[in-house]
Amino acid sequence: MDDVLADLFAVIEDRKETLPEDSYTASLFTHEKGENEVLEKLGEETTELVLAAKDDDREEIAHESADIVYHLLVLLAMKDMELSDLEAELEARR
Image (cartoon, rainbow, N blue to C red; front, side, top):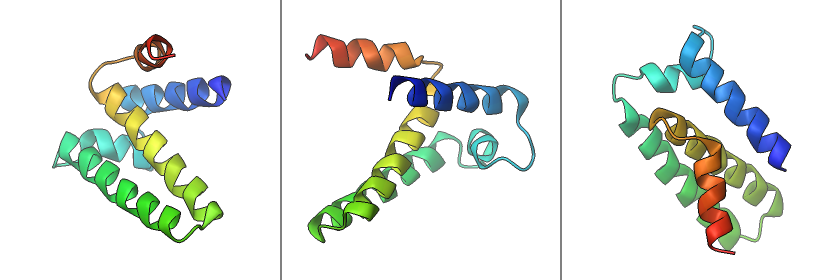
């Protein structure tokens, strides 16, 4: 899983720098709402995850969890944080 997260974060960082026009990720960095767009997406995806869990829908739980992780990584990139910041915090809680 570490490689998947690291690879995804690297792509997010690249999109932040290069801002390709056809990239959803890049659009989050340039959205008129700024970081509020990502914060709203995190809230929306969290609600969808809760509903999927309530319905015991394993496929949807996985899908919405991935959406949350993705948008969380975008937020970390927006705040000029590194994946290692998250990993250090998780490690400290072990």
